[in-house]
Image (cartoon, rainbow, N blue to C red):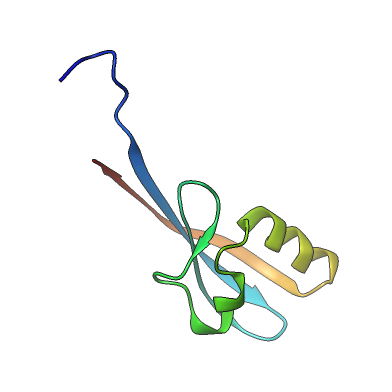
Length: 77
């Protein structure tokens, strides 16, 4: 492998979301978008949206009670 070529690393983070109406897992891809894999069905409306923007919106509406990072998966390919 050529040392000048950077290897892309796939990184996925899973958060536990607690809102005023439900709680469950939300998974975020390496680009910061919510992905459907391992995301709770109640939060499917977030899929394809920027995680940071969704979180800020819920905080602004006083619907976010808590958010905790559960795990980070790293897979170089």
